[in-house]
Image (tube, rainbow, N blue to C red; front, side, top):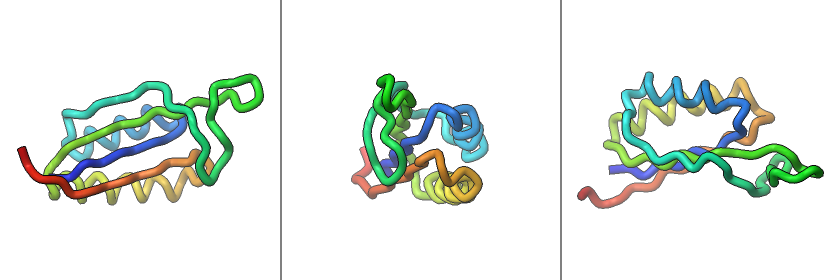
Length: 94
């Protein structure tokens, strides 16, 4: 079992949701507005830093996690300025 967190700019949200479908992932938690600062421009939802991110949390088996990671990493190569982050940790089933 894997826990996956994907954080990205809203501008790529539709594409990432399509990637979930291609990966066979049907269950997830979506946090629609996430603010923060990483290695790219801050996303704070303010007049100075107006953009917002969103976040997905997914629990899935290792096979689906592998497919999803591969697709997200390929996508991330095309959109290097959107701050797409992918985190994956193992967890106990159940």
